[in-house]
Image 1 (tube, rainbow, N blue to C red):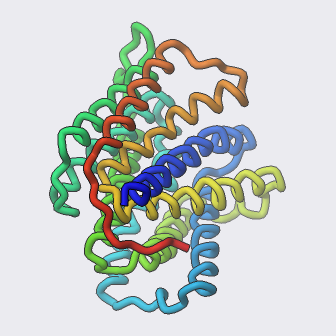
Image 2 (cartoon, helix red, strand yellow; image 1 turned 90 degrees about the horizontal axis):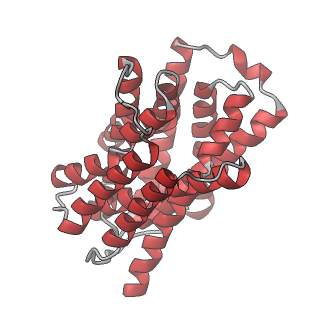
Image 3 (cartoon, rainbow, N blue to C red; image 1 turned 60 degrees about the vertical axis):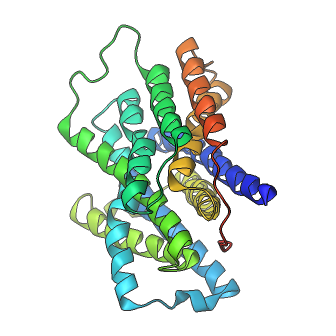
Length: 307
């Protein structure tokens, strides 16, 4: 039983690590001049196709879902998928990277609070302390020395970043709710979140940047987009949902914050930028939060493997 819990805990850690690799991938796509909304649409398309093929092979019955459930997922997918796949990148167009990271990583606190209402799981002292430690670690790691981080925040960037944080929180909470109640099977929820996420993102792209840039995507850009879609997203979110079968959403949200440590490390290795003392201190706070919530007494629940 304890081994089962550790396996799911490690799955969430793995998801956080994979998400941490998306920062340098996104940076490379930005350097290549890629339209980030195009990246979001293709990312959702890759996820939809990959998960759909897997379901078709392994459990085709999971495509069947009631109309009411389908409507619920369509509504949920709006803030979740647009926020996660596009909101963070949109925020970066108006805010600095440090400001964006600090605001986005309010999502562990939002998830901890949201669990009271959505999943009806009362966070324990470890989860509350872990959420606070995570936010403290991010703040310590990215706040400029002697600077005022919140000075001159663009309201549009702030709105997109908060939208992204809310989207990540809802994604965790409804993934956990699916495992808890079975209101819709987890694999079915996972698939249709991608389907409706793709629909919402396509609608957004149609009325904003348009589709003209699609024909100019280079081979190098496509390689990075495939990495973002297949490795960082499909594998990352699959193992994250796997962990949500037995780990509370608030705990999973905190543990996945290990992605910041991954991003710091990859910056040092790939970009030749060794972490500063503040970044190392921030990473230490986040690791402390992960260790703290690992003491959480989650009891395993019967779940299902994602494709």
